[in-house]
Length: 297
Picture 1 (cartoon, rainbow, N blue to C red):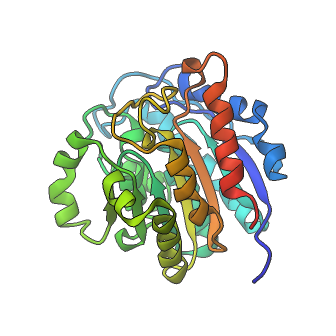
Picture 2 (cartoon, rainbow, N blue to C red):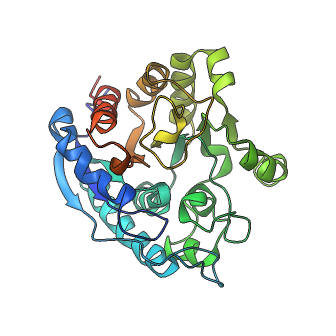
């Protein structure tokens, strides 16, 4: 097997609530915590994007719509350049609204890509069904081409097929009720496993199985990690706190099999809020977790 491509770290300092602060600070904080050196990565700098405007756009249903639509092609171009140049992007968010642009960049090079989405949510709302209008409610839905249409168009169309998406750790009961019909219908091929199901299978086994499935078909995959997959007591430095999530040790086991896969073409980390971590404890722990998961086998 060929050696894995080297990592290149790319920052996307955004927060989909539409105001300054919060997860915007995560890329800089994770760099200070040593993630670049720990991976022996090249620092590719930040994409010059922000999301501003707390009003929900009546046409798209997105908060800060103009900036969301502008940032997506910028992220797409930056990721495409790294992948085409033989590097694996590690995209430091910001929030998970970065995902449609990142996946589009991979799609531009490889045509087809899968997604291992380690997240407390499935994130397949659109501009009409999202309860908040925040772009972070919608990234997987956008990458699947469901809408909002203007955002899908900004990404150059869909990047994913439902059968190529595996969600690991989703547990939001309100979201589950909202999207139950969608998962039973249009997105029936999309796989969702909550924490209880992952524990029954074993966290390490679940990670290995997901990686093997995506390596077989479509042949390569992106790892999207949102730290709200962790239990609220284990990870208070995020904005979407929920009980009954994974513990740090469980998440490390899950990520090990994903990070070791030769089919892993890139990764992203989202929703770390350094403003909720004044002494940097949880930022450092996140950086250490990523370094262990993504180091070359």
